[in-house]
Amino acid sequence: MCLLCLLWFLPSFYNERMEFRFETIEFNKTVPTVPKHSGVYKIFDIRGKLIVLDKTSNLFDRLERYYGERSERVRDLDLREITGRIEYVRTDSAFETAYVLYWERKNYFPKTYRKMRTFRLFTLMKINRKQRFPRIYASRQIKAGVDYFGPFVSRGQFTRLKTMLERTFKLRPCLYNIRGNDPRDEDVEHALAEKINELASETKFEDAERIHRKLDKIHRARGEYKDTFFSVWNFNYVAVVASDSVTRCKIAFIRQARVIGFEQYEVESLEEALRSDLGRLFEAPVDRDSGDTRYDEFCLVCNFIVDPLQSVDLLPVRDIENLPSLVLERLRQRKRKRKPAGEAQARAERKPGRAQPEEKRAAPKC
Image 1 (tube, rainbow, N blue to C red):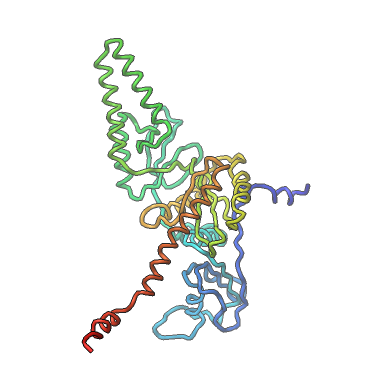
Image 2 (image 1 turned 90 degrees about the horizontal axis):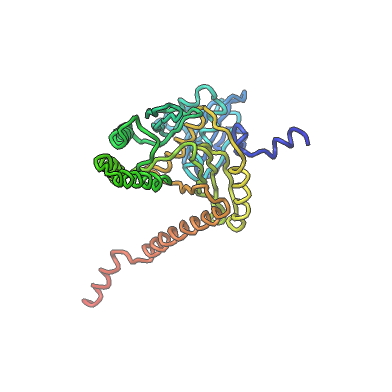
């Protein structure tokens, strides 16, 4: 097998970037014919150099501002004399638009693309397990061999959790999720309860009382702090995003906080095709690496799962066999939510106007 064929069968997360199919239009001094839809567009000059790379919620309106009739009230740059060609890709969700724009900027401006980000960055909680007495740091980069948790929407939120951990455990902060959904919760409580019983049987009641107070502090901390944070290295999810039709759906695959795939599926054949891609993308071993890309993509995803957006449905990748069924159920839930909204709009259209009741009241007087 040739090297090219071998690279073709490798999982997509070994690729440096994913390709998106841009439509090309050769500019002829008129307004380009593009859909009135959200998307990402690129404008090249007559020498083939990129001069504009941006996103928009309406491709037609944006290009009409560049190439339509000029107006003194519109101060956009006149590109009609220098444009050679236009490329665009249609997107169906804000998440897809932001991701395509991020990758295109990274491709064209590898040294300065981080200054062009159009999404919010978050603070992460950094904990180095290799230290004898772990400490907690605030970080905005990700390195291999260190654990990270987030996203923290403000530095105050980070400081409150850090202080609570220090007061609860009385040491340089450890790696324990006080939210109450950590799988080790029962193990910690069971170990402390056994220690209390052991000390009580030895009539060491003062030592048993100190451990009992520590257990109470853990319970109290879980009740007071309601936020949940993700571990970067365990951030394995599929994101179900909007598509152009109810018969299709788009899914982004996220492994260790990186978007490793972006595919569109027919709903009828979703279960079999998705199960195959899940096995290909998540079962193969992958090393932890350092770099800005992982941090950037983690923050990009978090922009759509924290308030006020929350426009992306995340499903954890735990049971690959049953995950396609969960995705189908989530799509059905979306369809049921859209149906009542459509019915309410139809009822509003059928509802008589304000003038009609007045006419009905005036009829008996005649």
